[in-house]
Structure formats: C-alpha cells, structure tokens
Image 1 (cartoon, rainbow, N blue to C red):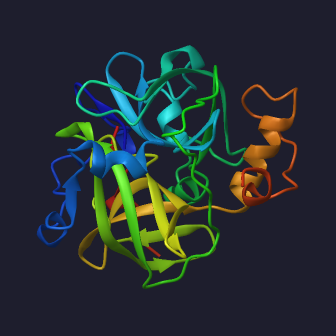
Image 2 (cartoon, rainbow, N blue to C red):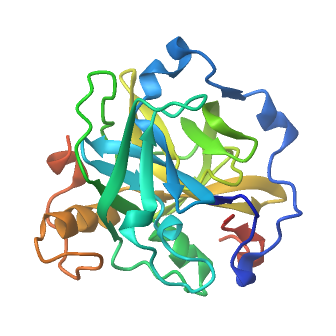
Length: 275
C-alpha cells in the first residue's frame, strides 16, 4: 500500500473508492505526536520511493530495513525500481528523522512475482530487505528482533505511516489476528495508502518483535481487514541472498539460517495493494 501524491494502483486490483477503515478501528489508531510516545518506535521509518510515493519499513539490523516487496516495483512498468530511488527516514516525525539513509541495494523474496494473478500467492511472498548505504549507529534507534510465532486471536500492534498521517508515525493497539495459514495472516488492523511494509508486532515478555509486515487490504467475511506475510522461510531466503556476495537483486540460492539466528480463503477481487 504505497502512498503516491497522485494515487494509483495496479489495474487488476483497483477499487480505491471502497472504505478501508472500519469505525471500530478508529479509536485504536493514534498518532505518536510526542517524542516520548515515539521513542520506542524510532526504528520504524518512512520509506520514500522516488519523488512522490512512500511505504513504511523497519530496521531489523543496523543496515537492513524490512518492508513489502511490492513497494520496490514500478506499478506502471511492473519492473523493479532503482535502489538509488529509495531512502529510509528512521523515526520520521514532523519534518525530521533521527537518521537518513539511502538504499545500497535490496533483495525481494525469490518467489515473489509482482504480476502474479493468484493474489494470495503474491501476498504470501510479499517481503523484501533493503540494505542501507551506511548502518544506523544511534543508541535511540534499536533494530527490532523477529518472531515466527503467531496464533489466531492474538493481539498485535502495527506502527505505520499512511495517507493523511504521513508526517508522524501512528500506532494501532490492539488489533488481532483473525485467521492464518502457513504464510499469510488476516488481521483486523487498519491500513491505508503508505502502510505497505509496516511492521506487525507481537509482544514477547513485553518486548515487541516483528511477526509480519502489511501487504494489502481485503474484504473478509464482509469486513475490512489487512493481510500480512508471515515471517519464516521467505525471510530466511532473503537473509541468505543478502549474504551471498553475488546477489544483487534476485539470487536463487536457498536460505539456511533463520532471521532470528542471523539478525538476533479470501476473494481475490476484494484484495487491494494500494499504490
């Protein structure tokens, strides 16, 4: 769900007039307006794509940002964008970031296909890692650990930038996991343009860990929901791709170690990747 100054989307999934925020979500979504409120979430940042669009990303290492794969594709040509067009603004709030970094390179899940017509397969692989040109070595910006453990009914938190709230991060807490399979989560969380790649957190003994990233919005059992990709094998492959010196964008070498070890039935017509 990439935010553009002039909004558009892939032709297959255009339906931007549909409401995507349910009334019962509004009370749980709030902007992090003060420094104290935003302090724990400084490793979440706005991911600027070119001159006129953005997604959300989160640090999982001092030089690695986790986001959604579709953010790194041109919606018109279907091709990958240039890494030089990507900038990460850690902790962006009211016109200032804790750190500004350009992308050195990025890798997307090797099974991801931007033009995939089976939309749930597209969602299940919609994850990417961006390597920054320089690590962020700031004691106030602590990369997040990951979690591969989720369960239906579990409360989660989402920190995001989006349309009408692009200048400060917002947090939704709680929303919850409504349904899941091995690779995709259905969540009650609010999403809007710009929220693609937003980290979905579970609490592990009070510590927020990233369990998923926002990929799309959808209709599920007549309600507005968001879809996220489960962390696990797809990220294992990404980490191996990053570690493979021959990898530039799409290495086919399979992953071996998990991210934790190395870094610490819906209707296709109602699924929308907001771009």
